[in-house]
Image 1 (cartoon, chains in turn orange, purple):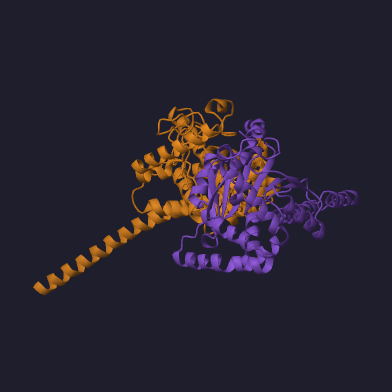
Image 2 (cartoon, rainbow over the protein chains, first blue to last red):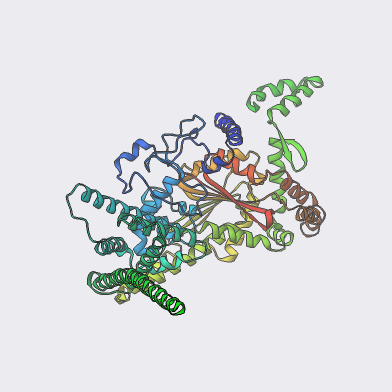
Amino acid sequence: KMAAAAAGSLRRAGWRLWRGRAGLRCQLYPPQRALHASAVLRRASDEKKEPLASSPQQQFESPPTDPQPDHEPQGPRSSYTGQGGQESEDYESEEQLQHRILTAALEFVPEHGWTAEAIAEGAKTLGLSGAAAGMFHNDGSELILHFVSQCNTKLSDLLEQEQKQVQLGKTEKKPTDQFLRDALEARLRMLIPYIEKWPQAVSILLLPHNIPSSLNLLTSMIDDILHYAGDQSTDFNWYTRRAVLTGIYNTTELVMMQDSSPDFEETWRFLENRIADAMNMDNTAKQVQSTGQALAQGLMGAAVTVSNAETNRAVR
Amino acid sequence: AAAGLGPARPFLARRPGALRALLGLARGLAAGPQTHFGFQNVSEEERREKIYQVFENVAEKYDVMNDSMTLGIHRVWKDILVHKMNPSPGTLLVDVAGGTGDIAFRFINYVRSVRERQLQQKLKRHQNLSWQEISKSYEEERVKPLGDSQVVVCDINKEMLKVGKQRAQHLGYSEGLSWVLGNAEELPFDDDKFDVYTIAFGIRNVTRIDLALQEAYRVLKPGGRFLCLEFSHVSNPLLSRLYDLYSFQVIPVLGEIIAGDWKSYQYLVESIRRFPPQEELKEMIEDAGFFKVDYQNLSSGIVAIHSGFKL
């Protein structure tokens, strides 16, 4: 016990020194804990058995309620490598444990909703006490944000796979409207297991303290889709396209929540119509632009002719 | 060291004078390192004894004094603690230095209402239940109103436990409640037993806080939560001055009038000043091995709730 206390005070002193040197940056990194054997945080070697559905370039954005944003460039399961030369490489960080708990909690959402109870049940399946749910907000917002972020990552993976297939020449490149339709459908289908409790989730995401993070996740997802759709615009179209697609996604989501047709047929039809509208609008906009240009040129020509005629008449 | 002194004592008793002085010194050394009792400096043994006496004296009037000193706000503080805990049915709580049972009773109330709501929602969801199933769920509510939740109140002081048991009887709490005599520095429980460990206004009176924190770590299950409600450091200078004035001028007087005991309440006020502030206590909790340690100031720092998880 004395050794632990001595080690503890040494560690604290060392950390204060390190902190002083590193300055602001150190706020991003959790304190060193390797010297104390953790009861629950697993070693990286234990984790090879469980596959995780996430890509190597994780575009995960942690919610602002988390005081320590996760900036690890390595794979999602490898731990934070200590800067003080200590052996914390083997243990996962608190962040990763929290992700594990939230992932486990998702299976209890249909029964308990997006609540602290679902998180407590999830923690219990990992062998932890239900009190671990106290690590998160009482309103379940972290669970929802985690879920949304997971879905977005899955979608990115899907789109990347498709792109690879096209590049290898195994499949044809889809026309834009088909591509957008399939991407949005795939993303919305991920909501199906939780569709009954989804209205609750949407209302929680609209709470003021959640809006920054939920908006962030939404915009990055739409950005992803358009990026894979091959959008390379550098003008104002970049904004209009994203705004339009966001609008389509949100309205389709609302339709889906009160759709009772088999396999959500109504929703997919709605989606198809909206995308068609958007494509038409895009074409119409181009046509209007060219018509407008033609019209302007015509008017200019007429004005020049009239002024020439005037000049001629004046000369005579 | 005390055992070593045993056989020597009868021999030394026959040689008074210088040897007795030596014995006194040895006993002083044996009693342990110096620590504080309020603003005095005493040995650890002496401190434990003195604190035991303090609470023995105040046990009867403990709740009345709490109400009058804090103008009833301590109830709000304790409510906030239990709300922060947000226990679900099936939680095992150990309330250390829980004496008169304030936290335990609040825990039971909270769990009971959560359980009722759960059962109601379950009924609502299954609208097409047969009469048999409906009556079974009412049976469940009657037989398991707390849903297997339990709270163990542990205190070092017999008098405080006695008062607590009387209160429980008076208020009608019997289910899921047990009373254990024990020392926070050496809890009489097995490892990995409890979901939540709370210590409300008790850790200040523990002589070796680090030992208490280590014991807390030991008896908690993995994933379990440590919650500590305690008087802490007020950073606002104006409020701090008012608070000091109130503490040193008013509280001991109240103690004399209501409980007939000036010195115990003088000790109380002094011990608050000697207790480590928020950040230091947070570091001590981290040293014991807890993760995600955080604190929440209540009433601008007069009281703080520290929380940590055994991960």
